[in-house]
Figure: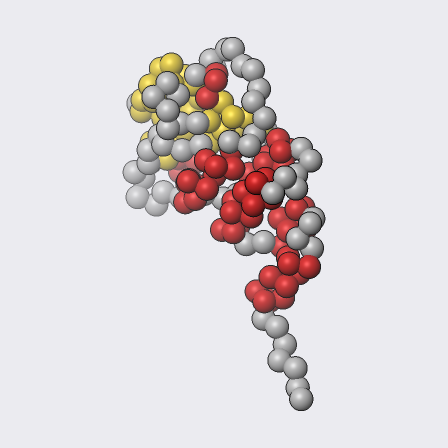
Length: 170
């Protein structure tokens, strides 16, 4: 009897199940769309030694977290609380201001504004974020990224507004 070879997706799934206790290996093999749900399962099961590092690693390998907003909200609740007292000015390039990912660099927001916008409809948003709504900051992708809880009424000290000019602020 001839054994039918596995498809790449089937093989990947088989390897994930075989190595389910190794989150780094699973991250490497899993599809991007499956990652937030897998991360949440690891966190809920208590299989993660350092939730902060774990979440940052999985976050940094994520593209378009807004497509899984509700799952990422649950994952980010596991991030260890850090005490911050100073509000910071943040920027976001895109069609709207609702999203986890912001940056402290206006030039990076300009890059995100134009990245996937053939119709030139995106804008740059700016706001001052309430420090207690900052989940974490990272520069691992050279984006000066600030991940925030944007959905609370007190998320911003200065509400998001569209940046109307093209020059860069210091």
